[in-house]
Length: 501
Image 1 (cartoon, rainbow, N blue to C red):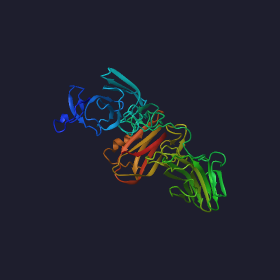
Image 2 (cartoon, helix red, strand yellow):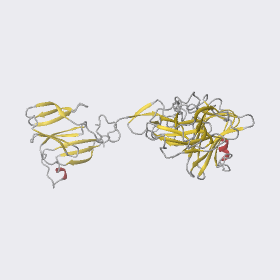
Image 3 (cartoon, helix red, strand yellow):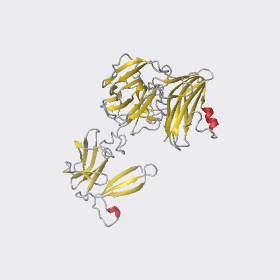
């Protein structure tokens, strides 16, 4: 209620009579905030093999959490916990007729000064080097002087957390110390945000693609090692591609062979996305990911690209294993003629349903075209990372990008976020179920207001954030996001669809 006062008596306890005669040491709970009255009291039982009378003084040290009990006739000083259990028993106290004791600690020193008063000698004895142990309430090995929360054994030292003003899970450089293991509201455990006024804009430097020369635009093939003995594994100036980079790798084999990269710097437990473009003229291309092994996939997964007259995008999301030699192998199993381009491995948000959501993959084709194919990735106007998606369409025509085949569940809540910039024309942001031309809420009473909000016009040179929360009406394995531009120019970046919990 405010404070505990300990008191002791010299007479011997007399069990069986009044209850207040049963003890030598008593504790009184005193209301210090209002009345100053005793609101509760209890006795501390006499410990076995300790004196049953003649207590001449008590001293409680809040530093050690210990009661020091002085017995005059028995010439003993006994350390007790607050339940009366003996911690240490000293006999032959070096001052006669003791009537007082005080302990003075000097944290962090484990030696204290002890003062003992004698009524017969009318003196005070002072002794240094008295051994003490400091109070550790939660028994975590860290005393209460140092422990930031001595009531919680899971935490003893303040942790640094970073302010997250925009609530995107990415912290600014502004930090504060908190005595807890998890960040409080408004803080996170990282300082990765480049701009904490704009959600999902982390500090990013350098190329996000973990592969060297993934777009094959550097000279030579030094970044890629041969797997087996291909007849041809060389760069080739491609004229069949309508978009993307000019150089591709031409792979011709008689038996199983291909190209690979070793020691790819993935982090165990992190989520990544493999993406590449491939055109197979003869045979097939088998792509696998190995942990110190080029012959076996670490998840027993093998992507197969079969005959195709055009370039097709292959992608795969995975969680990296523990290894210091992660590998990508792209090889055939016999006679084959294959063209490969824009290979990338990029770390992604594991909760995002979208592939290549930040447009950092080498290929622009992970996002399918919608209407005219006027999609291209650019590096000169971005809000996140190194690339954004640029859309441009002539007067009275439409273009766009979309992702199909998304899996969503009936009744669950999701959030769509799109960073966009529109110079001219009209950008329409649409969610469809097995249909790219109409929103899944078409015909719903709220749809008119919703569709009007999804039209985005000239943003006057600024990036804007569009957010929409939605609940699918049915389970679907072909939910779609369509970003459709008419009569103008726009940029897109850092798109996400995540389930809200």
